Each structure stands twice: as structure tokens, then as C-alpha cells.
Image (cartoon, rainbow, N blue to C red):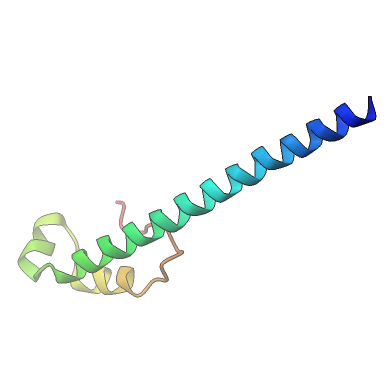
Length: 76
């Protein structure tokens, strides 16, 4: 009985570890996409920003945020 409980715990740990790696990879991928989106936002000219309802100051503030800061303040 001890061996089966121990084996089950090892299997559970492996599954949890794999899930952790997948979640970490997904988080890093999301941060890289966000960094690309912020760079694209910074390249928009003032007329384009006006069309989407953002000011240059809002864009600069968004682009100054660290890559891991994924919450956005641009929603109105």
C-alpha cells in the first residue's frame, strides 16, 4: 500500500510540475505579445491615437510600464 500511495504522489507531482512549466511558458508568451503590442501602440501617430480615443500621454504611460505588468489602464 505504501508503494502505491508514494507512486501516486510522484505522478501527481510530475503532472503539477508540467502544468507549472506550461503556465510559466504561457505567461512569458503573453508578456512578449504585450510588449509587441505596446511597441506598435507607440508607433501610432497622433491622428491614429485620436481615432482610437487615446492621448499621447496615455500611450507613453502605457509603454513605460514593465513587461510583466499585464493589467491595463486603457479601458474606459
